[in-house]
Image (tube, rainbow, N blue to C red):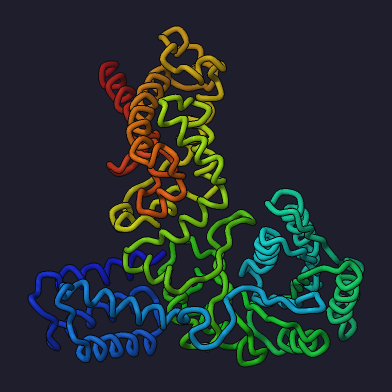
Length: 506
């Protein structure tokens, strides 16, 4: 999302790294380039101007550390200013951590607002899944009566969050679909639904009640009037505005309009994983005064993160985000499981089943390119690389076509077995041979790497946190098809073979 900004910052740091010292002239020249990069990334003009001015003042007033080079010194200065621009560290200004507050007696009432098409209803489900993972029970209330389909959609989302998302806390759903017919004919229908939902949530001792309010195609008096009515009648503890990150400066203006009417507690940026310029993320806090609280990082209900300015600043500057990566790993890989696998690796007993399990775990953590982009120094190197996620589907199908003995002892897979496996997953025999060969290399590498740990007992998650990278947690990542760092992953050895065959036929 931040490719343009990252390019601009890295170009500047490269130029400064060749200088003997930071001077006023080279700092001002560098920040002119940064300002251009920020404006091209759709950052608000006033925000970009002030940011660059502040960085120049910080740089000129700073005593250069002897142990650091000018480029490194500037990275530190820019990083501090970026964190401040994105909202600062939680608790620095006495504010609460950027999550959902707890109240006693419950429930905590969260009012969700947003324009139509912003992803508000789906975001309600993501927030419910996020809270469920924390062990907090949730009720979703369908208060968007203008669009009948929204009631049905929220019901589906609530059901998915309750049945499919991790956590033991329940996610319930409250709606009054018959009220959709009354909407527009009588005043306060949505308010009544919210009041009934609050009563039901208290009866069921629900921890958090999320109100999915109505949206419009644009901000107007009718929308704001209804939201003010709900706000006055229910008095929610927190009001969140969902804005589409893909709309750029329109998202910032929308947030500004809502904040002036409702005094929102925070913004949730949906579609944060999209191929957008990222300017809204840098502009929204400065322009509206409302901090970004959460970001939607994918299409599934589990794809939501608490917005952490320091981590986002690190990503923008190409320094990765190891903390978020470790957190994702810890959610998917238990300490006991990691140690068990580490012991198998140390003994050279890793099987295709272990390999497949790692692959599935890795894919649950998110898109491969997004995960690798969290590794320090990798994001920039991979910006032009394409990953064929479907290739991983084929790998899973291929391993699924193997017998139990073949998965435990891949060395027994001869040409006859390769033909049968290829027929089973509908692929080419050469691809089976390639996977078997790669697995052998991976198994050997994993054994060597595992033995580097203290007696093979160091958990993979701890290795990752210590800087071992994804290979430390998911051995053999570099050997997977579709993971080549040579450019497009669609031109593997299988593609070369087919090209030669076509050439011969001609």
